[in-house]
Every structure is written in C-alpha cells, then in structure tokens.
Length: 376
Image (cartoon, rainbow, N blue to C red; front, side):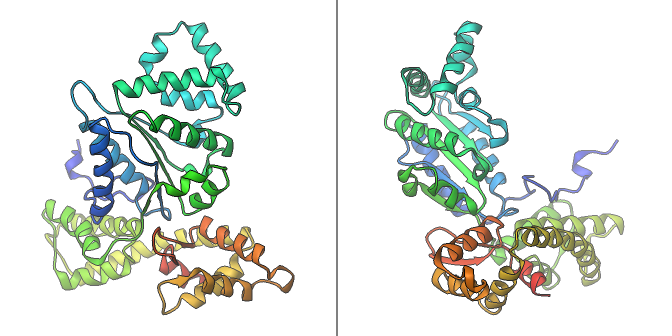
C-alpha cells in the first residue's frame, strides 16, 4: 500500500495547500495581529477584504488563517470559525445557519428555529425586531467566544445578502470580537462598491499577488529537499523565471520535477530534467491559457485585451489613466466614452486579466505570460 509520504507533495489545483507556504509572511503577519486582538477579546477595527487573481493562493491563506484561529484564544474563550461560499447561501436563513453555533440552535425547539429563520428571510432588509433578536443572539455568542466568519468567492455573493452581512458586521463589531473576512477575485472591489455599504472602503485590504524570486525558489526547493531530491541554483533559475512567480505555475513545476525524480530514481535534478518538465508544464499551461482566452472572447473583450497586452510589453505596471486611454483607443467610436472605458476596465479585472493591488494605485497583469499568449 502506498504511503502518503511517498506521494507527490505538489498538488496544483483549486485551493490545495502547497507543501510549503512561501512568501506570505507580510500577509500572515497582518492576520496574526488581528487574531491577537480577537484572542484578547478586542473587537477588530474593520472587516478584512482579501483579493487577487485566481491561482495566487487566497483560499490557501484562508485555510491557514482558520487553522491559526483554532489554535488561538484561550481554554475558557476559544475562537470559533465558520467558513462558507456564496453557492451555499440561498437566503438570509442560510447565512444565519453559518453564523450561529449549533449550541444556539439546540437551545430552541425545532418549531422555534424554523419560525425565527423564516421570519428573518422575510425581514432581512427591514432590520425588524426579528432580525434584531438574532443580532442579539450572535452578540451574546461572540461575548462568550470570538467568531471569525470566512467567505470565499465573495465576489459571487448575492448583493442583498452581502449588504446585510456587511451592516451586521459593523453593528456586531461595535460591541464584540467578530471578524468578517471576504476573499475573492479582483472583481470583488467593484462588487463591494455596489452594495451600498460605504464603510467597506475602510476595510483592511490584503492583496494576494505573485511571489518574489526567492520565495518562488523556496516553494520548490524545500519540499524537494525534504524528499531527498536536490537541485542546484543554476538549474533552478530557469524554473523560477518560467513560473512567473505565479503560485499555481510553481506547483505545476514542482509536481513535474518531483515526478521525474521518482521516475528516474534521481537524487539530483539536472538541466535535462528541467527541459523535460517544462514540456509537461507547458502542456497544462496552454490549456489554462486557452480557457482564459475563450472567456475573454465570449465576453467580447479579446480585442481590447490584446491591445492592453501590447502596452504592457516591456512595462510591468500602469497608472489607471494610462490604461483607460489604451482602452479608449481600442473601443469603437460609438463606445469611446468614460462609462464604457470604466466598464471595460472592470470587466478585464473581473476576468483577472489585470488587477490593482491595494495601496499601489497601479494596474498590473494578473499573469504576464497570459498576455504574451494572447498577443501570440
């Protein structure tokens, strides 16, 4: 029987934790600071909004934070976590079922539970007494045990539910240690601006982008070394460069190199294995690029995406005004106006073709090599 330790530690996919989480020390430090406040029973100052292109490791970081939270708190005041995604929320009652603990529900008779949640669904927007009763219940629970509510893929959330959740969070946080964490693609920023909760602009924003070169190298080398596989710096250099420092591609490279080492029973990888691994990585990557290109084409964005990719050649970041000008030049004359330019900019961000890391005021490619593929 195959042991887990004999399996490939690299698992490129959707939300899979890497064998070594590299290059997220800054983000982890910021989250640990919030966790320390919750552990002390102190309400956080703001919600946390985490966003970045797909494949950057947002879900992985959420899982890491959840695990850290479970280790935090005290014996008498443990931190409770609840995790969900918008596809599991069809009504306010669904949302509350994730927010309130099982103990709270057990204290109610079944008919009381059904009645309260049914009434909530009908009165979510009105902030009625029934809603306030449940707010009170959650407040009392958080006084006993801090709660972290994690919402992945938040950019796909129902706008009404999101508005209610944000307002709820603001109200609860005034009194008790409750933390709302929303994670999503770059389109999350625009989505949140449309749900009529102006205070969200003061949220704690964490951008999840590509790694630096050293962190990329560590993410590959350390798991290989743990399995007795060596690769020297000169052999590793083209791997780091080709990965674009993009976490999903890093895992593809790690998987290919580990497989080759096992197939050939090697303890040291050479440039020959790197060449073979690149062929395997490129096969997967071309399929990945093709899917992204098809989505842009289906939404009528392929021409403007190509024109934007052309201006990014030789430059890694652009001011919003410069990018809007490139979009304006790409649009037909009857659509060359500010509303259309802004909408196209949001659409390209929604497709993660470009994104605006928080605090920079600049746009950069989601994945530079995707732009190269689009141009080719």
